[in-house]
Length: 241
Image (tube, rainbow, N blue to C red):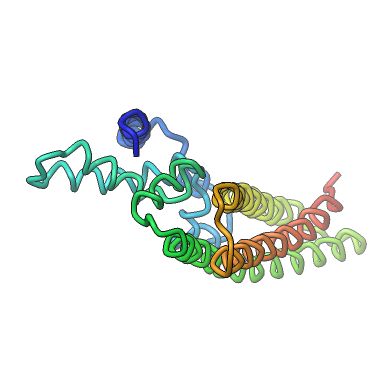
């Protein structure tokens, strides 16, 4: 990696870490905390993982790694911080930085593509786990909406209770849509990485495997998007007058 890129990355990491330490960054915890959202969407590592933007996710992981470098006896703490920071950020910081990292680690194209494929698979597994939690919440929310519709028709609606239920559904949708935004951002970065490798001459089975895994990630995200859209449409049909 060039000195310019290393210096630039270190500056980004320092800024993002500073934002977290001073509490100025709008983190996923702010989105998750203080809302009426279902706890199945607000608790656990998957919740925090997908409710952070790329820079925020990077800063959260890099802060720990950079602090570790500062405590070591390394003769070049700055270099240690750069390497540790990139490793903590992964694809969250963007395709260019991520690919620079992987190329510095793996000069052999096939080995590098295999490492990238492993990262895609890990993210896809997180998406699948998150989707399972989302499906359970969405199912319950659709049942709640159906009951509200029934009570509206029969003039048996408890307005206060209905408002609370709709508030929770709205909070759930906000979280899920933010999840999808960040999932799609990671997907786009991986797609760009594969395109850059292909443009630089990569080919063969390793690239085909990477493309297949990226396609699997895309399908998983599309499935969750479909589920969220169904819930959104059902929620939009409810008005309390």
